[in-house]
Length: 110
Length: 116
Image (cartoon, rainbow over all chains, first blue to last red; front, side, top):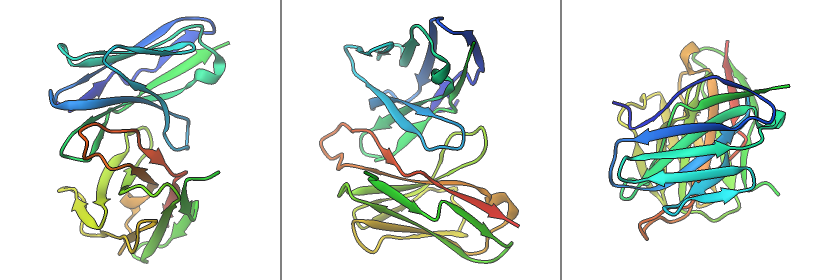
C-alpha cells in the first residue's frame, strides 16, 4: 500500500462546477498536511496547508479526517485556470520527509 | 523575489558525461531536498540535508551524489548520466521541524535534464 494515495484522474469538469479530491495516508503519525498545485513542466506550489479544524481560502476548502486518515480538497466555481495537477503531501515528525501522492489531474473545460 | 534558485534551468548532457546541478536559497532554511520528477509522476526524493547531516534514500542510485558546502547552497552531481536519468530535478527547502510540526516546502523552478 502506498503511503499517500490519490485518484490520478483526470477529472474533467465544466467551468463553474464544484469538484472534490480525496487523499488517504497510511502513517497514523503524520502531523502536517498540504495540498500543492503543479502546472505542466513547473514546480509544485503550495495551495494550502490543511488544519485539523478544516480551512478555507476563497473557492478552496481543505479538510482533515484523522480518524479515517484522509484529507480532502474542494474547489467551488471551477475556473479554466484551475486546470493543473493537485498533489497531496504528508509530513511525519522524525523523518523530515514529505511524502507525495501521485497527484490528481484536473481539467476545467470551457 | 526568487527564494529558491536553481541553475541551469535546462541542461543537456551526453550519456555518461558528468553533470552538476545547483540550488541556492535566500530563506536560511535548515533543510534542503533534491527530488527527481519524471513525466506524470510524483516527485521522488533522492536525498536531503538537515543542516550538514546528509540523508540518502535507500533506493537512490550511487550515480547521484550531493554536496552542501554552506546553508545557502546545495549541489546535485550525476556522475554518469544514463538515458533513464532524464527528468526534472527539483530542489526544495523547509524550516527546522524540531518542534514536531512542519511548514510547507519551498520549491525552486527545477532543472530539466536531457541526456543524449
